Length: 261
Ligand SMILES: Nc1ncnc2c1ncn2[C@@H]1O[C@H](COP(=O)(O)OP(=O)(O)O)[C@@H](O)[C@H]1O
Ligand SMILES: [Mg+2]
Image (cartoon, rainbow, N blue to C red; front, top):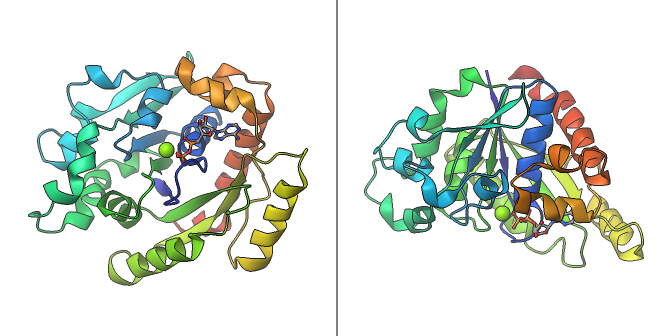
């Protein structure tokens, strides 16, 4: 059965989308069957994987509204001759989800119900969450087995983390008993500054969570890749960013939390 990972942090710009795209692509490179889900109305995962947001008949929003089935909105993105990544693309309309789904019977479970019909077909389903703790993130965490939290190596890294962990605990209590925090991954690490190192040490000392050994470096190739519609392993396979996300994919595959899924 597919393992569903929500990549979440209510802060913007911490590397959620970069991690979602490149973790998904590196898992696919390692022979895993992967589905990437774009739950952010901004649609950066969708466009970062080279999918034209303005030219889609259906999106995950339509599926959530019951206007199409998952197969109709799914885009198969060929990464390589042999490698496919399946994508559920986002729509700007998701921005109205808070109001749109208000009359639904169980608005928190819409994504879970949709994914339950396809999770058997995948080894991993990676969900890119929006930078907020609203209904879209609640749907993502309710559908997920684990939450992976990217933390940017900057001075305010710990700000807001207690609120995020509180939300995850609340969802675990009320909506998804099996949910686990899979761990945190540091992103945008700059070896040239003492600050990055201080942030990593500070978070390690203050956060009682599993921390991935892999630390994603700040790497300009990672920032460039989305404008070419490519994940880092295809944009610049030998870059430090590609190596970082390959290492993270290896660690994710080995994570003990998954052993029982
Ligand atoms: N490791 C990195 N090195 C360099 N730039 C990065 C790295 N990770 C993310 N970025 C850039 O930082 C910005 C924010 O990252 P993004 O993944 O979009 O964050 P979020 O989805 O949390 O808002 C983007 O412009 C992205 O290209
Ligand atoms: Mg994003």
